[in-house]
Amino acid sequence: MEKKEKIPFTMHVDLEAFIPATEEEKAYMVQMRKSSTFFRDGVKRLLKNKVATVSLIVIVLITLASLILPAVWPYSYEDMLGVQPGKPVDNSYNNLSPFKYGTTEQARIAAGEKIFPHVFGTDASGRDYFIRVVYGTRISLAVGFFASIIVLIIGLTVGSIAGYCGGTVDLVIMRIVDIIYSLPDMLMVILLASVMKMTLGPVIEGTVLEKIGSNIISLFVVFGVLYWVSMSRLIRGQILSLREQEYVLASTAAGAKGGWIIRKHLLPNSISVIIISTALQIPNAIFTESYLSFLGLGVNAPMPSLGSLASDALNGISSYPYRMIIPAIVISLIVLSLNLFGDGLRDAFDPKLRN
Image: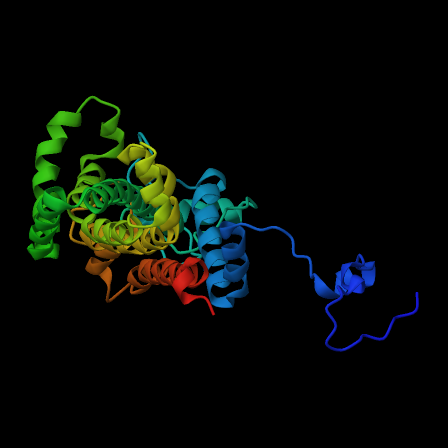
């Protein structure tokens, strides 16, 4: 079709403007993009962050190792290798250096038998140190994860109520938060852990919780009492900024209840802050558990944690310094990886930080 010359200053409609576009013109004008979601976009940005990706791989590897290795390792974390029923105690298993063997194992090796080595040696009681470090890593990760879940639930609930209700409710809750903030953190943690250790023992005796131990339960109580305030403040700030949005006002005008608005509108739009705060709370919980275990207020013996292993290593630090170094390196690696991964989550999911 021959294109007609356009007449200037004419009042006639240009019919060529209404001719359907060709496929080439459509491809040029419209660049199609696959539909995506907030979570999928955040994951893509997270995977582009090499530091956060490497940190995530390290965390996954450490977690898998702490879960799988105890099931296949030939030694148990509580077995004293030199102690056998009806026989005298063999002290040659105590304080073995890495890849060394006791007298009985040396005799079995001389007879042609293969013995699995003690990779990190043994402790003062003749227990394999490697599996104790692995099991201690599992305990520390479990305590950090569940403590963060407790902090998330309490902080999410209190912060949402304070931010949405406002007024007197917000004033009372924030004054309670200020009081908890004013308490000396470490002193209150030690006092609470000491008191709970004595009071919980008789209560849980003979129950399923006795296997967990009074010290771990007291740790969860400490986190539930003291460490939710930061999370609640963050959630409250987000709710305060979102509750005046048009979709919230429309839901209120339509007769929606406060709980429904919080669940369906306010919390989903605060999900980035929730994810980031929870991820950064886990290393804090692990560090708190480690120093409480170091002070003897952590997990119950003979169950190990990284902090209790470091505390036990103090007695022989001049002769066996690697026993202190190994759990310290594992704690540092876990906390550093979780912090870097949390920073990557913040960069990926926080809309305010997007380029």
